[in-house]
Image 1 (tube, rainbow, N blue to C red):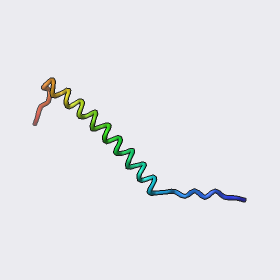
Image 2: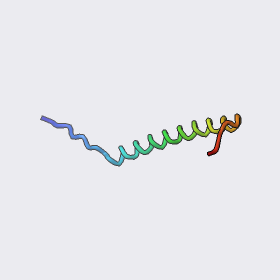
Image 3: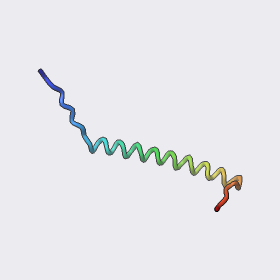
Image 4: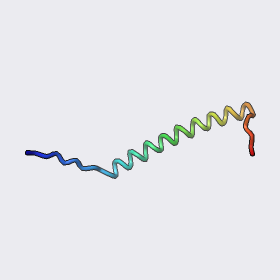
Length: 48
């Protein structure tokens, strides 16, 4: 009987995870910057 041995490549998983997180951060940063710029146009930002 043949058994399939799955080797988990931790380094590849870490790279994928880090890339996914980085893409999410980049997307969120762009969205926040857009909202911030829109708020600056309306002068509705209050600094406490």
